[in-house]
Length: 555
Ligand code: GLC
Ligand code: CA
Image 1 (tube, rainbow, N blue to C red):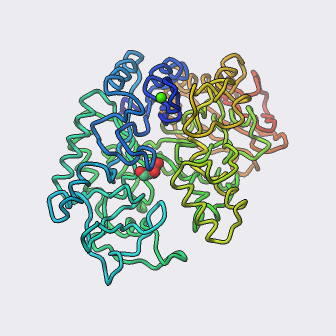
Image 2 (image 1 turned 90 degrees about the vertical axis):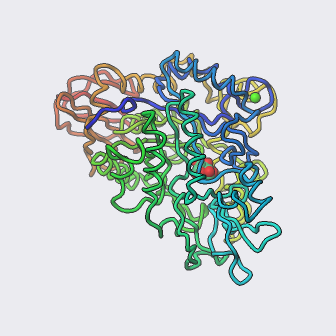
Image 3 (image 1 turned 60 degrees about the horizontal axis):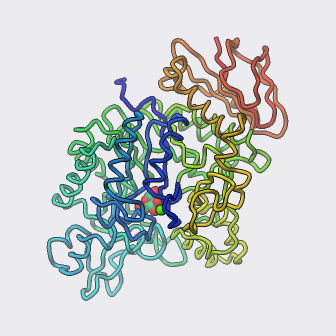
């Protein structure tokens, strides 16, 4: 396998709006990010992914871009962005940005021109289609609820939007549009960007017949992803994109891909794949409800373990995936994947260890390194997220009470990950001197960076050790390229695996249960490489307390 510059890197996702505010307007900014580069360096971070910072009306928090060449004034200026690039470079860190090119904002000049002249050139940058018998062209429900089709004022046409109506889909069939996008991507790469996280990209290929599907909900509509799954040929667009942009710059790309077809993984992440890597969402998909969040199941440990194991075994045949426990679209991993008794510093370290040492590129999401958890939400008004509001509505329509619907949102909402980073126990968790745009989690006095800096045994200091171990000269090779081999799969409550290469065999073993377990070691132990319970030696048998994790170098 050809070695790539990004194989051994540790990445970190910043959601700029909630990271750190330096001018008191309640919104995180580029200055805040620049001021924390040393903090991130000390955490062992090499690649920083910034969620969108482009000019935007923020209907979907920046995933609705009004100008691909401009920085949102809420976040700062292009000069500050250039400073961020330069400061990151000084520290040998790489910046990647979000690339949102399935859709843009309805405020983007292309869409404004299309509306002004629905027969003109720019209308063909989008999907403008005539309705059927007074109805929209098809019965698709958008990802954020409601029809995917919105009337084009003054015409008998509709435009397509797979997400919010303020996010019109771009017509990738149009070579002119594609070229505009490639120019933009190259412009950023030439500026010194190391690559992109690529948003919702599987959606760019449409079934141009826009067939109706069997309704799957009381609204008589069918999820628009069914159309995505019904069409072939996204790979041609993805190759065209890659050849015209990323490949020329040796850029790192990590794509958000759902709804991939059976057997396509090598085409996406193989040696010559469309992308460097894609996120592994297999564990997150376990709590996809059939009709929405309200019928989302709680994650069962056994299923979770089996899912990760299967995914690792499958992926290592093809390439590398990016491993996460949470991101800006998911609830906090500690609240989701750990049972209540394990939502402690020990349990948090255990989950982090098991995730960060998997084969693949670890992506740590802001606040994960201090063990941030879901917030407590008291009313639907406290939320900002467009998707949470839709899901609340769906739950109520399905007959849930206000209290039950709120409980569902509390468990699943994307805003759980979007509450401000908890920097200290001061007002607003030290995130801002103003009023935060989204409320701060009320547990900030217990969970914050400042207090964890002072505590040698904190989650933060443990995460530092964890990334340092992964990147240490001694173990870097095995943790980057070593094979993943599951172990103790039939032992209840234990998640364990080896990372093995010709020189080394590392065992990672964790006890997710409430009772201690004893494991018979199948290889003699050379050294304890990491322990969340300060263990320095083990005998022939490995005893693991509840929420204990250990990393052993075996013979
Ligand atoms: C992706 C983003 C999400 C956004 C959506 C539409 O899923 O991660 O935050 O809402 O795309 O752009
Ligand atoms: Ca600010």
